[in-house]
Amino acid sequence: DVKVTQSSRYLVKRTGEKVFLECVQDMDHENMFWYRQDPGLGLRLIYFSYDVKMKEKGDIPEGYSVSREKKERFSLILESASTNQTSMYLCASSLEGSPKGYEQYFGPGTRLTVT
Amino acid sequence: SQQGEEDPQALSIQEGENATMNCSYKTSINNLQWYRQNSGRGLVHLILIRSNEREKHSGRLRVTLDTSKKSSSLLITASRAADTASYFCATSYSSNTGKLIFGQGTTLQVKP
Image (tube, rainbow over all chains, first blue to last red; front, side, top):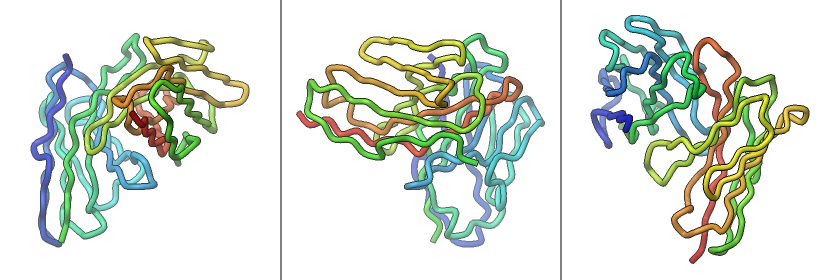
């Protein structure tokens, strides 16, 4: 079974803090993704990575950065957390060029509250 | 740049009834996928249908795709209380990146 793990299920941080969200997958997937999920807005892509050290901006990258130094790990960084970044953050991974057609495997999510 | 729109936003049915959810999208796709999310958890992939397919089955799930109307439907037959969850469609429009665009989801409640 593919397993995608996220470092925390719940996180509370203060405005202005630097926040690291970690995601690890154990299936040697090339692609990794960070989404945020807000009520009424569905899932929105923040960043994705298609290889080690490679990244591309998604739809809402402002206020975020990412790091992928190893294939299995994709980190999301909030440089200076703000209250409007309070959300559920979901990490996902997928094979590249898979005959299954890019099915994504999700972690359990991190619910971040910024106060 | 949301691709998928789902209808209805919420659905409440009795156990044993069928549940139908619809998804519409805007541009040409490679495939369309359906995911399920239990409250407060990550998403789980249910089924993928390619642009050259019209119907696909998996257990009690039936998915149809109409590329001329740019729409898909997910039918859950003989629903169970355990089917209570949010269901999302996601479209793959690029063959190079694996990116998906998710709809806003349909919240399904199945009453025992």
